[in-house]
Image (cartoon, rainbow, N blue to C red):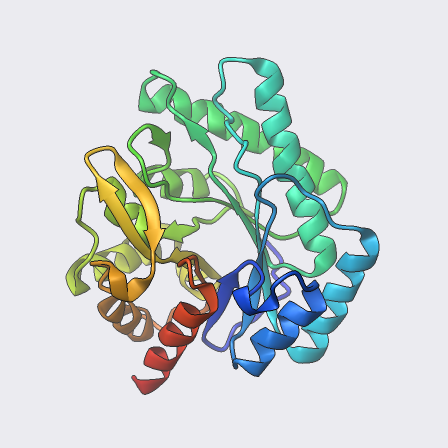
Length: 282
């Protein structure tokens, strides 16, 4: 994939507009991000892809001027393995729409929760998701939409998207890479993926199986997280959780990870600031 972005290091983004923005606009949000010395924002299309062409152009211009990075999260209403074909098609359409709008706004990457198992075995669901990504990519290519498409590691065992599934899917397509949600891996596994060695193994695996492009064009999520036997319950602020973010950041520095780490804590900009300041002490 021809990637327009070359990253010098790790960028720290807020998941959506900073809370300080209140009911303000994207330009105000980006101004706050710049003032806080953060590096950008993930556009959160949680309930639908709604952004006027004028807003897209404004965001692109501001981000280019201020050297801010953009990613995007597709709507939550996505299940490429739905039992109802119309819902599968609507899910694919939402991913395409997210890619189109985010690309116009200047984003380098989009992410989404791809599917639920719906009682089916892993191989069947993998093949279904793969087939839908093939269909999505044909449209993206036809419309000349060129950015990374990333299924996200998911936080519940009922959701398709453990680390191996996401990596294996990424091997199938030039424009697909994982979005590693460290909090989801931690919650899904009931408390694993939370030590220096476990974090190191994630990046060793990414490098070995997907090559340098997975390390040099990274897109990940991090927050504190509350979890139980069924996996993820809710996001928490980092300092109010057991998420071992300091060792994670140390590992990311050691592996020279480049790209975007999006903070999804409830206090998005404060924890993003916490992460960046700690990273800069290393």
